[in-house]
Length: 580
Image (cartoon, rainbow, N blue to C red):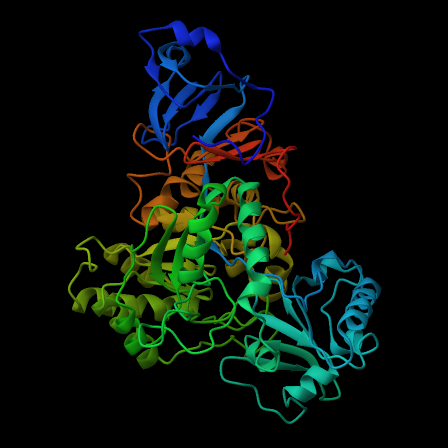
């Protein structure tokens, strides 16, 4: 057991009296006087556990501290111990030297001040970038436009990506470099917004590449540490496993799945290198792999499940079948509220989508595609259904297929739900969307879709669909997800579709054990049971019984990965990356 990462709290004491107990079994860590939420099949509540190496060796009551020797004994004085959260959909981002922390701006004037400072630092002609902004963060309560950016950056091109990653805004210089003007047609899968006079206002939805292909790429060495900081920060939220929905194989050798001059993103290969250096201070990661095409996927040679307990490969995904509501360009079966004729856009023809899904199935991969609007979900489920019923029904390891759709925001028609039930198609859901995107939903959705967006109870209870939770950076933080899933409240406090709420027990299971199931690791982690990895978190109160608002704001006291204390509130220094 290694505890050098952090300093243990005052609740940790070394109890020499146990040394003399010949009958006691040896352990490395004992945690007792706790409210232990095991999330086992019975959702049993215990009061103590013992850990040896990286695994749990005993779960029970007051007999545990009596029957086990351990160099480290932690008395929680009634605090809650439960499995670490498994976030099934995150996009860890590095911070470029070109970036401003746009999330810290609370007005357009503050944003302009940041831009001027960065322009002075970088010099004329250099690109300025940033990400994570939302209109609600500004006192003006509106989107950024080029008119806000131009006065501060007359000599620097600027592109700032909105939270969620589905749209970006550039200044006039950036538009010019991207060759976008009033006559530029909407690109495939995207939309160019215009002012009333017909000029582009700087916002491009779903095609951030229009700007970023003009931005000189960073080097991996320049952004690597910011990725590491990001991963460590996740531990402060109690996330002991996350699924990286941005993973690629781009930096594999050319001819073995990779490409020349890969971008400086966190890839499977780079993640393995980072974890080889410092895995005992980071959360575990399962990496989606963005579909690279038949030849590259075949040349790569590995499949879903390859890796180890810290870094492993997950599904093909999250290749986006449609946009999202931060654009908004999610693909709906009905018109957006107040916008006759506009239903968003799909990204693939039926034939293109089927070819990708079939190829992944034939090569033995799990699937986890992005589908937010009901039209996109229908198209995705239809493609899954055809592949699952026409291509031999196991993955390359002979396991059951655990294919899922990412997001599942707008509930599709009953026929599609029935197909999902028949084929056992699963859902990686983000209940926090209901909280954070409330304004967007009210602006764009009619009553039925507004009440049932990000539905959990209907797919889970009525159609018996498997649902696991994640956050997709909007915002990161399982407590927000638990709050929204169990209350159906948005930021305003208004309840939307109360019938879609689930119990706290169900929500906790969806954010722990069910995430492990999506990666075939349900026998290894996700619950506090003997033989499983000791991925644990300590909370100051019981999430099953505290008032809802307290749940929303609850902080994590301690996080353990494999029995190692890797975060302790007030003692572990972590960067403030809440909105980055």
